[in-house]
Image (cartoon, rainbow, N blue to C red; front, side, top):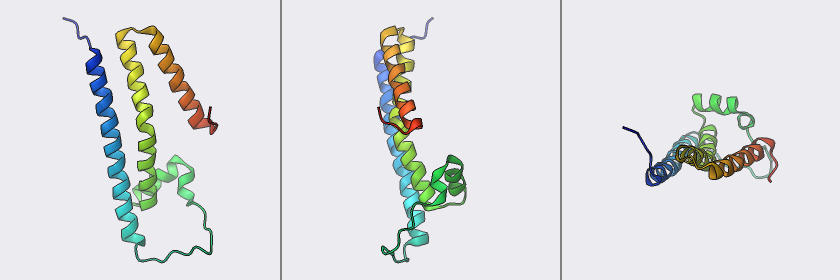
Length: 127
C-alpha cells in the first residue's frame, strides 16, 4: 500500500500553514503589544529627541533575550518576523509538494525562488 499525496492534500497543507502562520504571528504581536502597553502605557512620548531603535533588535539573540525577559518590543518584533517567515515556509512546503509529485520543472523553479528569497533576506539587497 503506497502513501500518495494528492495535489489537493498538498494545497490544503499549504493553506493551513498560511492561516496558522498569520494567526500565530498576530497572537504574538498582540501579546507583545499588551505587555508593552502594560509597562509603558502611562509614559509620555518625547518627540523632540530621537532615541533610535533598541539594542535588542540588532540580533536574533537580542530578540530571544528580550522575549525571555518579557520585553514587549522584542515580542512584537518576533511576531513580525513570524509574519515575514510565513510565505517563506509556504514556498518550502510547495517545493516539498513538487518533490513528492516528482515534478522536476516546478521543483527547480521553486528552489530557485526560495534561494532568491533567502539571498535577498540575508544579504539585505532586493533582487
